[in-house]
Image 1: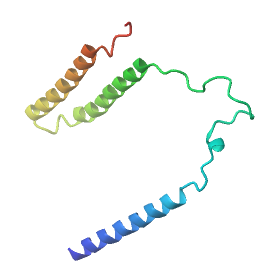
Image 2: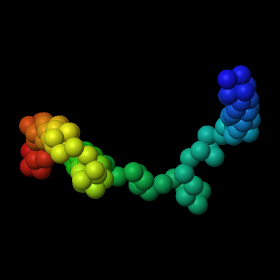
Image 3: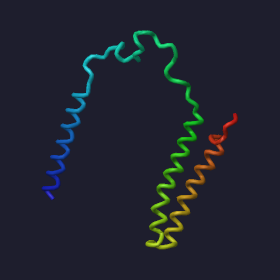
Image 4: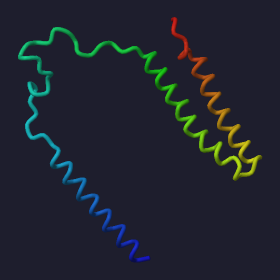
Amino acid sequence: MNIMIMMSMILMIISTVVMVIASLLSKKSIIDREKSTPFECGFDPFYVARIPFSLKFFLIAVIFLIFDVEIAIIMPVMLTMNSSLPEMWGVTFTIFVVILLVGLYYEWHQGALEWSN
């Protein structure tokens, strides 16, 4: 037991030292306003580099990611269906799908899926 505590202490000390060294080495010594601005051959930029971003596209992307993760979680569940109790598998899967459907209904009710406003 003492060996595990000693090893944990050594690992914590090593990781702390590495983090401190990395933070000291990564600091910029001189912060210059001219160096942090975009470079365009010495001229002022003609247009804004960042175009306005539609929040609708972001919401659709987040909804897509949520349902993409859903598929990634459902696939292994389908493979383990034969090795577990059918009742337990059915209850777990039903609760999972109901949570996702409630989330979808909430997004639909909030208007995140409607394009014309």
